[in-house]
Length: 269
Image (cartoon, rainbow, N blue to C red; front, side, top):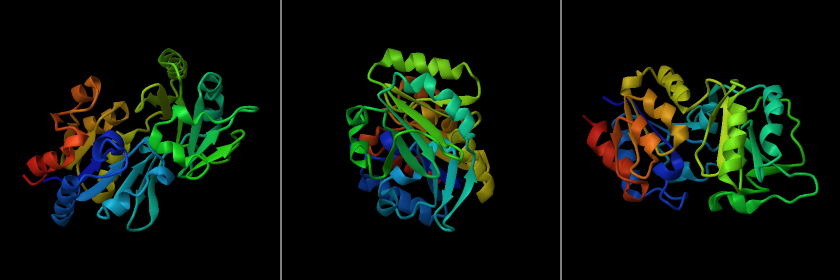
């Protein structure tokens, strides 16, 4: 019996507009929750940029945010799991990417902060359209990064895929962080050992479930650890080849309510 379902947002639970949840998915999630299955979203977004997902799906119990750096329990209103990198480590690696990227963000304390380079404007066009209106609102704007708190995630957006891969490879060489990608021409990193899979396993312990009793959905590279960790790791049909190869099952695309189809097929067995 499945005890928890964890779902990525963009490209998975959200429709292709990156904003709305299809009615078929809502119906399947309500049925799963009514059957006693816990629901979690597992996103690369930080807590302040997840939008109105909990209004669309009020049954959601947990939010795995910032690529697994934290887990928020909606019932208690507390962060029940937090695994961040020291700011000193992030600060050491920032110059390897910031000099050539078109926009950089740090996720700290559940908020996103975009770096405005001296003498320059923020390049909104490099962001996916859904995030552009968030700049200056849900995404704060800073001239430089000097924080005392630990960093959940750093993400960098490039105009050129070659420059993106070059910067990502340099950061991978340090061996102190987990580097992945969820958006073309961008990469992100968290503390080594921090990913959606580890967060899901931590959440399973909290609710008294085994990994075999977990179902997870995803479509991109940052979802791979979670798909491998879950007993039912399910890739969307719109996922990239590497993500599909890492999953145990494939469902329909996010445009075809693939989450609902797999829940109805596997969750109630």
